Image (cartoon, rainbow, N blue to C red; front, top):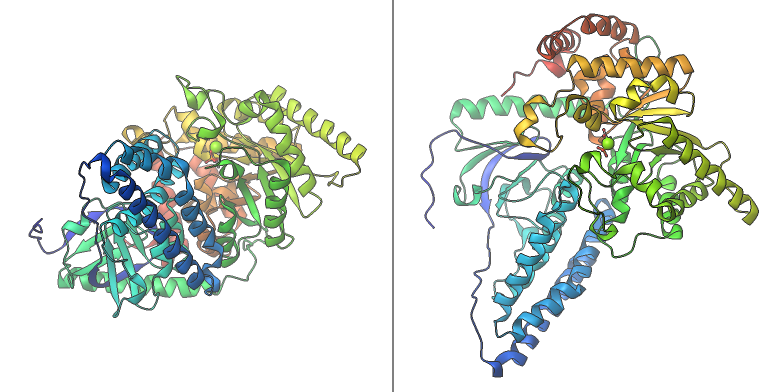
Length: 591
Ligand code: PEP
Ligand code: MG
């Protein structure tokens, strides 16, 4: 296919998955295999099955070789599980036996595999949850590897990029991303991919600016074309003009300077100028993300989303396995607290293995704590594992999507029953285990003063709170313009929750995405939040803000904001205020 003739300064917007600015020339490494699909004679079936099996064996050898190389690199060791996942996919019955079955229907190996991959993709596409849907990319990566082997296209060797350049590819598998030579790959952009794909997670660990999901960038660029990547905003500029180049060189300089400057704060405490300590904790999804927690010096884990333990397996993890995983995370947390949230599935989070029924209105259906209380046996297994783990470190347990007092009482009853069982069995646990609830439904906000009597802490989940308060589906792009953290209704809800916690003398944290937004840090402290838990990469900026503002000023600002009627007015005041206080962080003009 011929390339489109491009104008100077062609702007594209994808998904910025790893922050930073990279400026350089393209190294196009797209080598998608040409899939030659054809029918075969019945007499050729056995030979074709054996050709396919050889490709599977070769794929396994390739992955094992990469694993060996990668295991020698300490910063990547934590990600070896991705290669193990790919090795497991290579053993998957649906993939391997499914393809052989198609070959028996007289289709050549490439055609048979392509059909099976399409069926698998369709299964993943029907999943609402972004994280789970993107696990499809692991199946794609394995499928591409097999197709490349079958069609004789040599393995792409990203480890050998000779000169400093920007890698452009249709897709990059996690295995390829791991092999990237950091000194020569300035950044990368891809047609495919999403925010939580393994490739994105790896790019962040490697500190390589990256933008994914650009759809057709590979058909727009050629080797040596100058390109700018802004991994923070997701903007990519092809053939930048002198002027744009100059502007981005300056931006890069100030970004790099700011990052270096933030490094100075790494080991300093998160404390306001009027000496209020505000611990900044990390949100954790998969165990290997602990590396990010350490890298950015987050203080322990404020939200461990355990649903990710239940993914991609035919049986839910048993008590011992969960106990081991929790203990391992506690070990890595070095004595800091780890808030383990019980299973939060249903709604936008879907675990196919648990056979949830189809519901007309899943976000308001049998999800989160409702599901756990319904599936008591499963819930007990998790609670026993959490209680046992509480003897290995500082654990807090958190229940998602509580909407009434009866639910939390039911949870507490289960905890005390399990404690009695553990006592009988002589198994240790922390008798003072703190019990908390997510405040993420309007009813929980409205009765926060009642709920505060029942628990040791609140953790506000603004992602859901905003969705339910404003009646705006958090995953629906058509109403995304209404999804607004600064809506006066949200500010009032947050204030009401913090006040209820304050009156009852319990701790109140915030763990939705809003917590990681450095622009809001002063407001959140002014509202009365004691702890913020966020994507670990956001910790340095938020800390930088908090060390330069006072809680007292935050309280004054909140008073002013609560008198405003629209979110536009709210955001204007916050921006003005933060620009005035921290021009280095907030004066960058928007793109
Ligand atoms: C939230 O709703 O804000 C939250 C932190 O939980 P999740 O995003 O996992 O629903
Ligand atoms: Mg939630």
